[in-house]
Length: 64
Image (tube, rainbow, N blue to C red; front, side):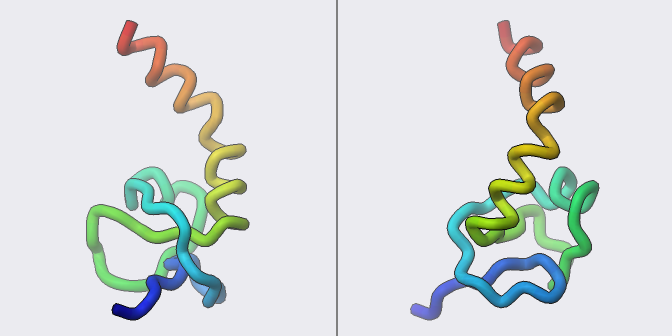
């Protein structure tokens, strides 16, 4: 089984997390097909978390 690589254009690092394509497309230029999930390396996942912090907080409030 080969390791997945980051789906951000220009990045070839090993992927550590999988996130929704819709959310990731708002932040990054992505390569590959139009699957529903994308793989992100540690660096891009950290950036994803920082840039979606407010949105994720609002989603959590909606669950309460």
